[in-house]
Image 1 (cartoon, rainbow over the protein chains, first blue to last red):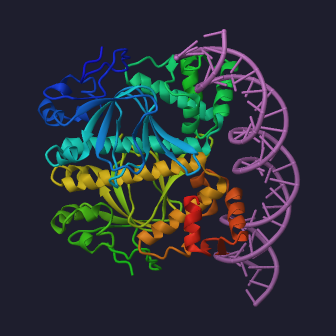
Image 2: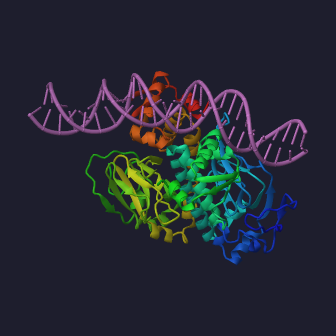
Image 3: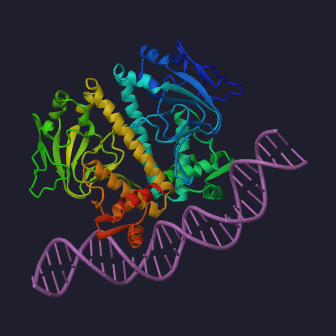
Length: 252
Length: 252
DNA sequence: CGAAGACTTGAAACCGGTCAACTGGAGTGG
DNA sequence: CCACTCCAGTTGACCGGTTTCAAGTCTTCG
Protein backbone atom coordinates (compact mmCIF):
# COMPACT_ATOMS: atom_id res chain seq x y z
CA UNK A 1 0.00 0.00 0.00
CA UNK A 2 2.92 2.28 0.70
CA UNK A 3 5.56 2.87 -1.90
CA UNK A 4 8.79 4.47 -0.93
CA UNK A 5 7.66 7.90 -1.96
CA UNK A 6 3.94 7.66 -2.13
CA UNK A 7 1.21 6.71 0.26
CA UNK A 8 -2.54 6.76 0.37
CA UNK A 9 -4.00 9.35 2.69
CA UNK A 10 -4.51 7.78 6.05
CA UNK A 11 -3.38 4.39 4.78
CA UNK A 12 -2.03 2.07 7.43
CA UNK A 13 0.99 0.03 6.55
CA UNK A 14 1.97 -3.17 8.27
CA UNK A 15 5.13 -3.56 6.22
CA UNK A 16 8.48 -2.61 7.67
CA UNK A 17 9.69 0.70 6.26
CA UNK A 18 13.15 2.12 5.79
CA UNK A 19 13.70 4.99 8.22
CA UNK A 20 14.45 7.38 5.41
CA UNK A 21 14.50 7.28 1.64
CA UNK A 22 15.58 9.71 -1.02
CA UNK A 23 13.14 10.19 -3.84
CA UNK A 24 14.35 11.41 -7.18
CA UNK A 25 12.72 11.73 -10.56
CA UNK A 26 8.95 12.04 -10.62
CA UNK A 27 8.54 11.05 -6.99
CA UNK A 28 6.57 14.17 -6.08
CA UNK A 29 4.36 13.75 -9.13
CA UNK A 30 3.11 10.47 -7.71
CA UNK A 31 2.84 11.67 -4.14
CA UNK A 32 -0.52 11.45 -2.40
CA UNK A 33 0.08 15.00 -1.18
CA UNK A 34 0.59 16.27 -4.72
CA UNK A 35 -2.53 18.42 -4.60
CA UNK A 36 -2.43 19.61 -1.03
CA UNK A 37 -0.09 21.65 1.17
CA UNK A 38 2.29 23.93 -0.75
CA UNK A 39 2.86 21.39 -3.52
CA UNK A 40 -0.57 22.24 -4.90
CA UNK A 41 0.70 25.73 -5.73
CA UNK A 42 3.20 24.36 -8.24
CA UNK A 43 2.68 23.10 -11.78
CA UNK A 44 4.33 19.88 -12.90
CA UNK A 45 7.45 21.59 -14.17
CA UNK A 46 7.91 23.54 -10.99
CA UNK A 47 7.32 20.45 -8.93
CA UNK A 48 10.29 18.91 -10.68
CA UNK A 49 12.51 21.53 -9.10
CA UNK A 50 11.51 20.59 -5.58
CA UNK A 51 11.23 16.89 -6.26
CA UNK A 52 14.95 16.35 -6.05
CA UNK A 53 15.39 18.02 -2.70
CA UNK A 54 12.65 16.13 -0.90
CA UNK A 55 12.73 12.78 0.80
CA UNK A 56 10.36 10.79 2.95
CA UNK A 57 11.13 9.51 6.42
CA UNK A 58 9.38 7.52 9.10
CA UNK A 59 9.05 8.24 12.80
CA UNK A 60 8.05 5.94 15.63
CA UNK A 61 5.49 6.89 18.31
CA UNK A 62 6.82 9.51 20.76
CA UNK A 63 9.78 10.22 18.56
CA UNK A 64 10.80 13.88 18.58
CA UNK A 65 10.89 15.30 15.07
CA UNK A 66 12.52 18.53 16.22
CA UNK A 67 12.68 20.48 19.44
CA UNK A 68 11.95 24.05 20.39
CA UNK A 69 15.21 25.92 19.89
CA UNK A 70 16.69 23.58 17.28
CA UNK A 71 18.05 25.24 14.15
CA UNK A 72 15.22 25.21 11.62
CA UNK A 73 16.98 23.36 8.81
CA UNK A 74 14.01 21.51 7.37
CA UNK A 75 10.40 22.00 6.41
CA UNK A 76 7.92 19.12 6.44
CA UNK A 77 4.72 17.80 5.00
CA UNK A 78 2.88 15.17 6.98
CA UNK A 79 2.17 12.21 4.70
CA UNK A 80 0.76 9.79 7.21
CA UNK A 81 0.01 9.69 10.93
CA UNK A 82 -0.51 12.34 13.59
CA UNK A 83 2.02 14.90 14.79
CA UNK A 84 1.65 17.11 17.86
CA UNK A 85 3.27 20.51 18.30
CA UNK A 86 3.82 21.79 21.80
CA UNK A 87 5.54 24.22 24.13
CA UNK A 88 6.42 23.49 27.74
CA UNK A 89 7.22 25.38 30.91
CA UNK A 90 10.28 24.57 33.01
CA UNK A 91 8.23 22.53 35.50
CA UNK A 92 6.80 20.29 32.78
CA UNK A 93 3.40 21.88 32.23
CA UNK A 94 2.72 21.48 28.52
CA UNK A 95 0.48 23.17 25.99
CA UNK A 96 -0.12 21.40 22.70
CA UNK A 97 -0.57 24.15 20.12
CA UNK A 98 -1.77 21.92 17.34
CA UNK A 99 -2.24 18.45 15.91
CA UNK A 100 -1.13 17.80 12.34
CA UNK A 101 -2.59 15.19 10.02
CA UNK A 102 -1.79 14.00 6.49
CA UNK A 103 -1.59 16.99 4.17
CA UNK A 104 -0.54 19.42 6.89
CA UNK A 105 2.64 21.44 6.74
CA UNK A 106 5.11 22.38 9.47
CA UNK A 107 8.46 23.93 10.08
CA UNK A 108 8.14 27.63 9.30
CA UNK A 109 10.17 29.83 11.58
CA UNK A 110 10.83 33.54 11.69
CA UNK A 111 13.93 33.34 13.86
CA UNK A 112 15.85 30.48 12.25
CA UNK A 113 15.01 28.26 15.21
CA UNK A 114 11.89 26.17 15.63
CA UNK A 115 9.58 27.85 18.12
CA UNK A 116 8.02 24.65 19.40
CA UNK A 117 8.62 20.92 19.63
CA UNK A 118 7.16 18.50 17.08
CA UNK A 119 6.58 14.91 18.11
CA UNK A 120 5.09 11.86 16.41
CA UNK A 121 1.90 10.73 18.14
CA UNK A 122 1.66 7.37 16.39
CA UNK A 123 3.74 6.11 13.49
CA UNK A 124 4.37 9.00 11.15
CA UNK A 125 5.58 9.45 7.60
CA UNK A 126 7.00 12.84 6.70
CA UNK A 127 8.23 14.49 3.54
CA UNK A 128 11.27 16.61 4.42
CA UNK A 129 12.67 19.62 2.56
CA UNK A 130 15.96 21.36 3.35
CA UNK A 131 14.91 24.88 4.30
CA UNK A 132 17.75 26.69 2.55
CA UNK A 133 17.13 24.91 -0.72
CA UNK A 134 13.41 25.53 -0.63
CA UNK A 135 13.69 29.19 0.35
CA UNK A 136 16.24 29.53 -2.44
CA UNK A 137 13.39 28.91 -4.87
CA UNK A 138 11.30 31.74 -3.46
CA UNK A 139 12.66 34.18 -6.05
CA UNK A 140 11.82 32.00 -9.02
CA UNK A 141 8.60 30.52 -7.65
CA UNK A 142 6.52 33.38 -6.27
CA UNK A 143 3.49 31.12 -6.09
CA UNK A 144 5.36 29.08 -3.52
CA UNK A 145 5.78 32.01 -1.15
CA UNK A 146 2.18 33.06 -1.72
CA UNK A 147 1.09 29.61 -0.71
CA UNK A 148 3.27 29.53 2.38
CA UNK A 149 1.91 32.94 3.34
CA UNK A 150 -1.56 31.58 3.00
CA UNK A 151 -0.76 28.48 5.05
CA UNK A 152 0.76 30.73 7.67
CA UNK A 153 -2.26 33.03 7.92
CA UNK A 154 -4.52 29.98 8.04
CA UNK A 155 -2.57 28.68 11.00
CA UNK A 156 -2.73 32.09 12.62
CA UNK A 157 -6.48 32.07 12.28
CA UNK A 158 -6.67 28.63 13.86
CA UNK A 159 -4.39 29.83 16.65
CA UNK A 160 -6.76 32.71 17.38
CA UNK A 161 -9.72 30.36 17.56
CA UNK A 162 -7.73 28.23 19.98
CA UNK A 163 -6.96 31.29 22.14
CA UNK A 164 -10.68 31.98 22.39
CA UNK A 165 -11.21 28.37 23.38
CA UNK A 166 -8.44 28.31 25.97
CA UNK A 167 -9.27 31.66 27.52
CA UNK A 168 -13.04 31.69 27.50
CA UNK A 169 -14.68 28.30 27.03
CA UNK A 170 -15.81 25.82 29.68
CA UNK A 171 -14.51 22.25 29.77
CA UNK A 172 -17.67 21.01 28.05
CA UNK A 173 -17.42 23.63 25.31
CA UNK A 174 -13.74 22.85 24.82
CA UNK A 175 -14.44 19.16 24.29
CA UNK A 176 -17.34 19.87 21.93
CA UNK A 177 -15.24 22.32 19.88
CA UNK A 178 -12.37 19.86 19.76
CA UNK A 179 -14.53 16.98 18.55
CA UNK A 180 -16.20 19.22 16.01
CA UNK A 181 -12.84 20.36 14.69
CA UNK A 182 -11.57 16.79 14.44
CA UNK A 183 -14.69 15.83 12.52
CA UNK A 184 -14.38 18.75 10.08
CA UNK A 185 -10.71 18.11 9.43
CA UNK A 186 -11.37 14.43 8.76
CA UNK A 187 -13.98 15.45 6.18
CA UNK A 188 -11.51 17.81 4.51
CA UNK A 189 -9.12 14.89 4.14
CA UNK A 190 -11.89 12.91 2.46
CA UNK A 191 -12.62 10.74 5.47
CA UNK A 192 -15.97 10.24 7.20
CA UNK A 193 -16.86 13.02 9.62
CA UNK A 194 -19.00 11.02 11.91
CA UNK A 195 -17.43 8.20 13.68
CA UNK A 196 -14.53 10.33 14.90
CA UNK A 197 -11.26 8.49 15.30
CA UNK A 198 -9.07 9.98 18.03
CA UNK A 199 -5.49 9.16 17.14
CA UNK A 200 -4.18 10.86 20.28
CA UNK A 201 -4.59 9.92 23.93
CA UNK A 202 -6.65 11.61 26.67
CA UNK A 203 -3.53 13.25 28.11
CA UNK A 204 -2.80 14.84 24.73
CA UNK A 205 -6.36 16.05 24.35
CA UNK A 206 -6.04 17.56 27.83
CA UNK A 207 -2.77 19.30 26.96
CA UNK A 208 -4.40 20.68 23.81
CA UNK A 209 -7.47 22.03 25.61
CA UNK A 210 -5.81 23.34 28.75
CA UNK A 211 -7.49 20.75 30.98
CA UNK A 212 -6.45 17.71 32.99
CA UNK A 213 -6.85 14.10 31.85
CA UNK A 214 -9.50 13.57 34.52
CA UNK A 215 -11.62 16.48 33.33
CA UNK A 216 -11.42 15.28 29.72
CA UNK A 217 -12.54 11.82 30.76
CA UNK A 218 -15.33 13.06 33.02
CA UNK A 219 -16.61 15.47 30.38
CA UNK A 220 -16.71 12.77 27.70
CA UNK A 221 -18.57 10.49 30.12
CA UNK A 222 -21.06 13.29 30.79
CA UNK A 223 -21.63 13.83 27.06
CA UNK A 224 -22.24 10.10 26.70
CA UNK A 225 -24.71 10.14 29.60
CA UNK A 226 -26.44 13.14 28.03
CA UNK A 227 -26.92 11.15 24.84
CA UNK A 228 -24.77 13.43 22.72
CA UNK A 229 -22.29 10.74 21.73
CA UNK A 230 -21.30 7.11 22.16
CA UNK A 231 -17.88 5.76 23.10
CA UNK A 232 -17.66 2.17 21.84
CA UNK A 233 -13.93 2.37 22.56
CA UNK A 234 -11.81 5.20 24.01
CA UNK A 235 -10.50 6.21 20.60
CA UNK A 236 -13.82 6.14 18.76
CA UNK A 237 -16.50 8.79 19.19
CA UNK A 238 -19.87 8.22 17.52
CA UNK A 239 -22.01 11.32 17.20
CA UNK A 240 -25.64 10.46 17.88
CA UNK A 241 -26.98 13.48 15.96
CA UNK A 242 -24.30 15.00 13.76
CA UNK A 243 -26.27 18.13 12.88
CA UNK A 244 -27.44 18.75 16.42
CA UNK A 245 -23.88 18.20 17.53
CA UNK A 246 -22.57 20.79 15.08
CA UNK A 247 -25.03 23.34 16.47
CA UNK A 248 -23.98 22.49 20.02
CA UNK A 249 -20.29 22.81 19.17
CA UNK A 250 -20.78 26.14 17.42
CA UNK A 251 -22.50 27.44 20.54
CA UNK A 252 -26.25 27.14 20.12
CA UNK B 1 4.35 67.29 16.04
CA UNK B 2 2.19 65.34 13.66
CA UNK B 3 2.28 66.06 9.99
CA UNK B 4 -0.37 64.71 7.73
CA UNK B 5 1.67 61.72 6.72
CA UNK B 6 4.33 61.49 9.33
CA UNK B 7 4.44 61.16 13.07
CA UNK B 8 6.96 60.49 15.77
CA UNK B 9 6.72 57.10 17.40
CA UNK B 10 4.51 57.39 20.43
CA UNK B 11 4.09 61.12 19.90
CA UNK B 12 0.97 62.55 21.40
CA UNK B 13 -0.78 65.22 19.42
CA UNK B 14 -3.12 67.73 20.91
CA UNK B 15 -3.95 69.29 17.55
CA UNK B 16 -7.16 68.39 15.80
CA UNK B 17 -6.52 65.96 12.96
CA UNK B 18 -8.37 65.32 9.73
CA UNK B 19 -10.03 61.93 9.85
CA UNK B 20 -8.24 60.75 6.77
CA UNK B 21 -5.64 62.11 4.42
CA UNK B 22 -4.15 60.92 1.16
CA UNK B 23 -0.42 61.02 0.93
CA UNK B 24 1.31 61.20 -2.41
CA UNK B 25 4.89 61.80 -3.44
CA UNK B 26 7.58 61.02 -0.92
CA UNK B 27 5.15 60.64 1.95
CA UNK B 28 6.31 57.14 2.87
CA UNK B 29 9.96 58.23 2.70
CA UNK B 30 9.33 60.61 5.58
CA UNK B 31 7.16 58.24 7.60
CA UNK B 32 8.20 57.36 11.11
CA UNK B 33 7.46 53.74 10.22
CA UNK B 34 9.79 53.84 7.24
CA UNK B 35 12.19 51.33 8.79
CA UNK B 36 9.79 49.03 10.53
CA UNK B 37 6.91 46.72 9.52
CA UNK B 38 6.96 45.63 5.87
CA UNK B 39 8.14 49.02 4.62
CA UNK B 40 11.60 48.19 5.92
CA UNK B 41 11.83 45.42 3.30
CA UNK B 42 11.67 47.91 0.44
CA UNK B 43 14.36 50.20 -0.95
CA UNK B 44 13.54 53.82 -1.70
CA UNK B 45 12.52 53.12 -5.28
CA UNK B 46 10.24 50.30 -4.32
CA UNK B 47 8.75 52.38 -1.55
CA UNK B 48 7.70 54.86 -4.22
CA UNK B 49 5.44 52.22 -5.70
CA UNK B 50 3.51 51.73 -2.49
CA UNK B 51 3.63 55.37 -1.45
CA UNK B 52 0.84 56.35 -3.75
CA UNK B 53 -1.59 53.74 -2.57
CA UNK B 54 -1.25 54.46 1.15
CA UNK B 55 -3.02 57.01 3.29
CA UNK B 56 -3.19 57.76 6.97
CA UNK B 57 -6.37 57.88 9.01
CA UNK B 58 -7.37 58.56 12.60
CA UNK B 59 -9.65 56.57 14.86
CA UNK B 60 -11.29 57.61 18.11
CA UNK B 61 -11.28 55.42 21.26
CA UNK B 62 -13.54 52.34 20.94
CA UNK B 63 -13.93 52.88 17.23
CA UNK B 64 -14.11 49.62 15.28
CA UNK B 65 -11.47 49.52 12.54
CA UNK B 66 -12.93 46.37 11.00
CA UNK B 67 -15.02 43.48 12.20
CA UNK B 68 -14.65 39.74 12.10
CA UNK B 69 -16.27 38.66 8.84
CA UNK B 70 -15.81 41.95 6.97
CA UNK B 71 -14.29 41.67 3.51
CA UNK B 72 -10.55 42.16 3.95
CA UNK B 73 -10.05 45.10 1.62
CA UNK B 74 -7.25 46.87 3.45
CA UNK B 75 -4.00 46.19 5.24
CA UNK B 76 -2.74 48.47 8.01
CA UNK B 77 0.29 49.71 9.83
CA UNK B 78 -0.23 51.19 13.26
CA UNK B 79 1.42 54.62 13.36
CA UNK B 80 0.28 55.78 16.76
CA UNK B 81 -1.86 54.51 19.61
CA UNK B 82 -2.99 51.06 20.71
CA UNK B 83 -5.21 48.65 18.77
CA UNK B 84 -6.80 45.49 20.18
CA UNK B 85 -7.72 42.43 18.15
CA UNK B 86 -10.39 40.12 19.49
CA UNK B 87 -12.85 37.32 18.88
CA UNK B 88 -16.12 36.89 20.74
CA UNK B 89 -18.62 34.16 21.49
CA UNK B 90 -22.34 34.65 20.90
CA UNK B 91 -22.99 35.37 24.59
CA UNK B 92 -20.42 38.17 24.70
CA UNK B 93 -17.45 36.39 26.21
CA UNK B 94 -14.42 37.94 24.53
CA UNK B 95 -10.83 36.91 23.97
CA UNK B 96 -8.36 39.58 22.96
CA UNK B 97 -5.81 37.85 20.73
CA UNK B 98 -3.36 40.69 20.62
CA UNK B 99 -2.53 44.33 21.27
CA UNK B 100 -0.87 46.33 18.51
CA UNK B 101 1.40 49.34 19.00
CA UNK B 102 3.16 51.76 16.66
CA UNK B 103 5.11 49.80 14.05
CA UNK B 104 2.82 46.77 14.17
CA UNK B 105 1.04 45.43 11.13
CA UNK B 106 -2.47 43.98 10.75
CA UNK B 107 -4.99 42.85 8.22
CA UNK B 108 -3.65 39.64 6.69
CA UNK B 109 -6.34 37.13 5.91
CA UNK B 110 -6.32 33.75 4.24
CA UNK B 111 -10.01 33.66 3.45
CA UNK B 112 -10.63 37.16 2.11
CA UNK B 113 -12.48 38.07 5.29
CA UNK B 114 -10.94 39.39 8.48
CA UNK B 115 -10.85 36.64 11.05
CA UNK B 116 -11.16 38.93 14.04
CA UNK B 117 -12.30 42.40 15.05
CA UNK B 118 -9.84 45.31 15.34
CA UNK B 119 -10.70 48.19 17.63
CA UNK B 120 -8.93 51.38 18.66
CA UNK B 121 -8.12 51.36 22.38
CA UNK B 122 -7.20 55.03 22.61
CA UNK B 123 -6.80 57.51 19.78
CA UNK B 124 -5.14 55.73 16.91
CA UNK B 125 -3.40 56.71 13.69
CA UNK B 126 -3.24 54.08 10.96
CA UNK B 127 -1.60 53.81 7.57
CA UNK B 128 -4.00 52.00 5.24
CA UNK B 129 -3.20 50.04 2.04
CA UNK B 130 -5.77 48.65 -0.37
CA UNK B 131 -5.20 44.91 -0.25
CA UNK B 132 -5.65 44.25 -3.95
CA UNK B 133 -3.17 46.92 -4.94
CA UNK B 134 -0.58 45.75 -2.47
CA UNK B 135 -0.92 42.07 -3.32
CA UNK B 136 -0.66 43.11 -6.97
CA UNK B 137 2.94 44.05 -6.25
CA UNK B 138 3.82 40.63 -4.88
CA UNK B 139 5.03 39.47 -8.30
CA UNK B 140 7.42 42.39 -8.76
CA UNK B 141 8.45 42.81 -5.13
CA UNK B 142 9.33 39.36 -3.79
CA UNK B 143 10.96 40.94 -0.75
CA UNK B 144 7.54 42.24 0.21
CA UNK B 145 6.03 38.76 0.38
CA UNK B 146 9.06 37.45 2.22
CA UNK B 147 8.58 40.16 4.79
CA UNK B 148 4.89 39.49 5.18
CA UNK B 149 5.65 35.80 5.57
CA UNK B 150 8.10 36.68 8.29
CA UNK B 151 5.63 38.96 10.04
CA UNK B 152 3.06 36.21 9.82
CA UNK B 153 5.32 33.54 11.32
CA UNK B 154 6.34 35.99 14.05
CA UNK B 155 2.70 36.47 14.95
CA UNK B 156 2.17 32.74 14.89
CA UNK B 157 5.01 32.32 17.33
CA UNK B 158 3.51 34.93 19.64
CA UNK B 159 0.14 33.20 19.34
CA UNK B 160 1.69 29.93 20.46
CA UNK B 161 3.25 31.60 23.49
CA UNK B 162 -0.15 33.03 24.31
CA UNK B 163 -1.74 29.57 24.06
CA UNK B 164 0.76 28.29 26.60
CA UNK B 165 -0.11 31.23 28.83
CA UNK B 166 -3.87 30.79 28.49
CA UNK B 167 -3.89 27.05 28.88
CA UNK B 168 -1.27 26.44 31.52
CA UNK B 169 -0.31 29.50 33.54
CA UNK B 170 -1.76 30.72 36.84
CA UNK B 171 -3.25 34.20 37.20
CA UNK B 172 -0.04 35.48 38.79
CA UNK B 173 2.11 34.01 36.01
CA UNK B 174 -0.20 35.46 33.38
CA UNK B 175 0.10 38.96 34.81
CA UNK B 176 3.88 38.68 35.16
CA UNK B 177 4.23 37.43 31.57
CA UNK B 178 1.97 40.18 30.32
CA UNK B 179 3.89 42.94 32.06
CA UNK B 180 7.18 41.47 30.92
CA UNK B 181 5.96 41.37 27.33
CA UNK B 182 4.72 44.96 27.52
CA UNK B 183 8.09 46.04 28.84
CA UNK B 184 10.03 44.21 26.13
CA UNK B 185 7.86 45.57 23.35
CA UNK B 186 8.25 49.12 24.67
CA UNK B 187 12.03 48.65 24.56
CA UNK B 188 11.85 47.41 20.98
CA UNK B 189 10.03 50.60 20.07
CA UNK B 190 12.85 52.58 21.67
CA UNK B 191 10.91 53.48 24.79
CA UNK B 192 11.91 52.83 28.40
CA UNK B 193 11.22 49.27 29.55
CA UNK B 194 10.79 50.02 33.17
CA UNK B 195 8.05 52.30 34.13
CA UNK B 196 5.49 50.35 32.12
CA UNK B 197 2.67 52.42 30.68
CA UNK B 198 -0.56 50.43 30.33
CA UNK B 199 -2.53 52.03 27.53
CA UNK B 200 -5.41 49.59 27.96
CA UNK B 201 -7.84 49.15 30.84
CA UNK B 202 -8.10 46.33 33.39
CA UNK B 203 -11.03 44.79 31.52
CA UNK B 204 -8.91 44.59 28.37
CA UNK B 205 -6.00 43.05 30.22
CA UNK B 206 -8.45 40.51 31.63
CA UNK B 207 -9.83 39.67 28.18
CA UNK B 208 -6.28 39.23 26.92
CA UNK B 209 -5.22 36.89 29.74
CA UNK B 210 -8.40 34.85 30.06
CA UNK B 211 -9.18 36.27 33.50
CA UNK B 212 -11.79 38.59 35.07
CA UNK B 213 -11.24 42.25 35.92
CA UNK B 214 -11.38 41.39 39.60
CA UNK B 215 -8.63 38.80 39.36
CA UNK B 216 -6.39 41.17 37.38
CA UNK B 217 -6.88 43.84 40.02
CA UNK B 218 -6.34 41.49 42.95
CA UNK B 219 -3.23 39.99 41.38
CA UNK B 220 -1.68 43.39 40.73
CA UNK B 221 -2.43 44.37 44.32
CA UNK B 222 -0.77 41.19 45.53
CA UNK B 223 2.33 41.87 43.43
CA UNK B 224 2.47 45.36 44.92
CA UNK B 225 2.15 43.96 48.45
CA UNK B 226 4.90 41.45 47.66
CA UNK B 227 7.18 44.34 46.72
CA UNK B 228 7.52 43.25 43.09
CA UNK B 229 6.09 46.46 41.66
CA UNK B 230 4.58 49.82 42.48
CA UNK B 231 1.35 51.28 41.13
CA UNK B 232 1.54 55.08 41.43
CA UNK B 233 -1.52 55.21 39.19
CA UNK B 234 -3.60 52.42 37.61
CA UNK B 235 -1.94 52.85 34.22
CA UNK B 236 1.65 53.04 35.44
CA UNK B 237 3.60 50.02 36.69
CA UNK B 238 7.03 50.60 38.22
CA UNK B 239 9.18 47.50 38.45
CA UNK B 240 11.10 47.52 41.73
CA UNK B 241 13.82 45.18 40.44
CA UNK B 242 13.74 44.93 36.66
CA UNK B 243 16.19 42.03 36.43
CA UNK B 244 14.60 40.07 39.24
CA UNK B 245 11.27 40.74 37.61
CA UNK B 246 12.46 39.36 34.27
CA UNK B 247 13.57 36.15 36.00
CA UNK B 248 10.21 35.90 37.74
CA UNK B 249 8.29 36.44 34.52
CA UNK B 250 10.36 33.87 32.62
CA UNK B 251 9.54 31.35 35.33
CA UNK B 252 12.42 31.21 37.80
C1' DC C 1 -1.70 -15.09 32.96
C1' DG C 2 0.43 -11.16 34.81
C1' DA C 3 2.18 -6.56 34.31
C1' DA C 4 1.95 -2.11 32.50
C1' DG C 5 -0.38 1.58 30.99
C1' DA C 6 -4.52 4.09 29.61
C1' DC C 7 -8.82 5.40 31.01
C1' DT C 8 -12.42 6.14 34.43
C1' DT C 9 -14.43 7.29 38.78
C1' DG C 10 -14.63 9.26 43.53
C1' DA C 11 -13.73 12.65 47.30
C1' DA C 12 -11.81 16.79 48.82
C1' DA C 13 -9.31 21.09 48.11
C1' DC C 14 -8.52 25.29 45.83
C1' DC C 15 -8.05 28.89 42.38
C1' DG C 16 -10.44 31.99 40.06
C1' DG C 17 -15.25 33.50 39.11
C1' DT C 18 -19.46 35.78 40.62
C1' DC C 19 -22.00 39.09 43.01
C1' DA C 20 -21.93 43.12 45.59
C1' DA C 21 -20.22 47.08 47.84
C1' DC C 22 -16.77 50.55 48.27
C1' DT C 23 -13.07 53.98 46.71
C1' DG C 24 -11.11 57.51 44.12
C1' DG C 25 -10.21 60.46 40.35
C1' DA C 26 -11.98 63.01 36.23
C1' DG C 27 -15.31 65.68 34.35
C1' DT C 28 -19.53 68.63 34.84
C1' DG C 29 -22.48 71.98 36.34
C1' DG C 30 -24.42 74.77 39.92
C1' DC D 1 -14.89 76.42 44.06
C1' DC D 2 -17.35 72.73 45.54
C1' DA D 3 -20.83 69.09 45.07
C1' DC D 4 -22.35 65.67 42.17
C1' DT D 5 -22.07 62.09 38.89
C1' DC D 6 -19.88 58.64 36.45
C1' DC D 7 -16.92 55.11 35.68
C1' DA D 8 -12.73 52.53 36.33
C1' DG D 9 -10.55 50.20 39.66
C1' DT D 10 -10.41 47.85 44.10
C1' DT D 11 -11.84 44.95 47.86
C1' DG D 12 -14.73 41.49 50.30
C1' DA D 13 -17.53 37.23 50.85
C1' DC D 14 -19.07 33.34 48.85
C1' DC D 15 -19.54 29.92 45.22
C1' DG D 16 -18.45 26.43 41.97
C1' DG D 17 -15.89 24.33 38.15
C1' DT D 18 -11.67 22.27 37.70
C1' DT D 19 -7.76 20.30 39.72
C1' DT D 20 -5.60 17.26 42.81
C1' DC D 21 -4.95 13.05 44.97
C1' DA D 22 -6.26 8.45 45.14
C1' DA D 23 -8.24 4.27 43.92
C1' DG D 24 -10.43 1.54 40.78
C1' DT D 25 -11.36 -0.80 35.91
C1' DC D 26 -10.29 -2.10 31.41
C1' DT D 27 -7.22 -3.13 27.52
C1' DT D 28 -3.11 -4.49 25.59
C1' DC D 29 0.71 -7.11 25.13
C1' DG D 30 4.57 -9.89 26.39
